[in-house]
Image (tube, rainbow, N blue to C red; front, side, top):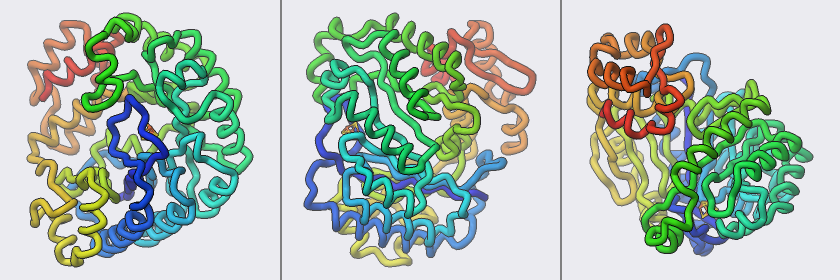
Length: 400
Ligand code: SF4
């Protein structure tokens, strides 16, 4: 079975006002965090010498993947990032053809770092561009401008990377559909193979929430945001990018294997404060607390770590159990994860995995959503219709 590892790098140069991902700007923890992460990788890799076997996601033709997300993995010294990757590859016995991704911010990406990433084995870069409009970037509080983003994409290509992804945020005050189309055109010209488009969300606890939650009229209206979503999706298609998940589109051959492993209910390991994983029947995480993480990794014994990963220990100082999944929970996760994909729910795979027909387990939800025109059945798949895409959360709620 392919192996998937997510490494959370919780450091950023500054905090973007809309962001609720776990990240900190206190650099004094960087060295100790990466030492702790090295220890976690060694401990976990040693324990996972064979497949746990309890998790039966869809794993057809999949490759091993390692994903350095954040935070901003391109912010710390590349020496720390590269030694952690090298240790991860060794400890988890990652195959040479694995997809190995690093997220990067244009403001902290340099030619030297790119050279180090390439030499260490990264073969995919996901760049947080968000927009190529300087006004929109300013509203988002990003540390780079449009020129900096384009320069970064050119540097990445020059460094020899061909598997490049870029993020765009839609629904930002002042943003237009035509502006986003222009960004996609430039991405295409600069060799971007994969584009993730995220709608701006007001997350509690962020500066944007404080600023906009009382004056929603300053935001793009939900109707305009939906028009933008479909307009962007159509333009991506015209430009050769196939939308394979609500937020993700790729040129042929460039879908993210790592992200697909999430939607396919595959097992994945979590490394680093703020990281979440799924092993056996357990969804687990590390608390959003670098200090607790460093402390725990300095003290935890191999036996304690093993007991936790086997679901026997309960919460520790940093590690915590999010949920122990029953068979029923695992079935409910299928519509939750798969309805986000364009492929939809694969009815035969569901039967192979659970030995029961999806349409028998979820008869009412399937029937009512097909009648409302939100879900469609095509041969042995069930997926959202165009109207269903706009109400994805409502449809998914019916299955939970
Ligand atoms: S750089 Fe990314 S992770 Fe860091 S604060 Fe900004 S959006 Fe969040």
